[in-house]
Length: 333
Ligand code: TXA
Ligand code: MG
Image (cartoon, rainbow, N blue to C red; front, side, top):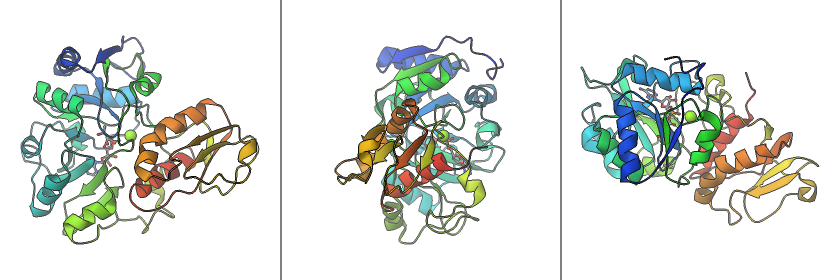
């Protein structure tokens, strides 16, 4: 089935109740695609042991290349069937699972997970989501679920079922509507392959919380500069792209711009903004992360040419928020 060109599927909206979850599991079992809520963003799920189903994810998203995908499991014990855990990865799993952390660990040899999930690597990204609907779906299926964010490639990640439908209606079999997601940015990804764990992507678990468990600093991926200032070009691929231009660390707002604020103090020029939303008037980074993608979508819908984004602190979830905003602002291909 060529999902790249097909828009003929009828995408069913399933309730987040036992009947809906059973229906979603049945779709996955027969090789279909189901979007489902996690605590971070909605995932576009396929049975990770079914290569044809996993290929359908790439087609539905219009993803040009085969990046490795995260395999989602209902608990750490089931994750251990697919990945080899050492002292470090086990400590992180014990502390942060279920939760917004993905661990990249060596594959268990002969694992039934499709090569398309690992992109042919001998490592695998594993995550145990902290969401009752995701967990119930994983238990009902009894197999790992490969799931990137449920958006068209390069678009803003979905934090509500309606966002999934905006991007993927007619291209996937179903979406389970579990309401708004709580964390709002994707999982933190830590690679536990070498001597020192590497932070591959900042996300829902702050760097400092992970380093506190490790008792050492996370390494940066090869090619990435320290901090989030000039990221290596490959790391700053345009992503989360609204139609509007995105202007970061805006100390003032120009007439006609849409404004995305943070904290209690409005920037200069706010009176002439085309639209204004505040990620967190109280300056709470957890609230800001939860609002980030939804507010970007809403400001983009105003068709303002530019979204001016107020400075966001670097600490805690600020690192993940700044990372996503930097990608939203990156030059488009
Ligand atoms: O919060 C999340 O992580 C969401 C929800 C749905 O769980 N998922 C998500 O998946 O963000 P995705 O496909 O957007 O991000 C997966 C990333 C890839 O970009 C890849 O870089 C990394 O995980 N990854 C997965 N397996 C890997 C591996 N074996 N080695 C290195 N990186 C890996
Ligand atoms: Mg994504």
